[in-house]
Image (tube, rainbow, N blue to C red):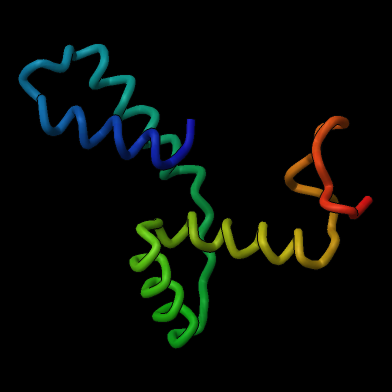
Length: 96
C-alpha cells in the first residue's frame, strides 16, 4: 500500500467517522502508524527544500513523492538499471 493510499483511507475515514467500524479504524490507524515509524527523512538545504516543496505543490505531489520522482528520472536518464521494463513486443522507436 502506498502513502497516497494510506492518506486517502485516513481522509475517507475522517469524512465518515460515524460510519467507520472500530475494527476498520484500528486497521487504518495501525497502517498509518507503521508508515510513520518506517518513514525515513531526507534533509535538504533550505533553498533546495523550498524549491522542492514549491515544485511538489505545483504538481500536486507530496514532498516524498517528488523526491522519488526526481530520483527515478535521474536514474533513468543516467542509464542505471531500467526502472520501467519494456515488454518483448513493445515498440522502441528505432532504439534497441
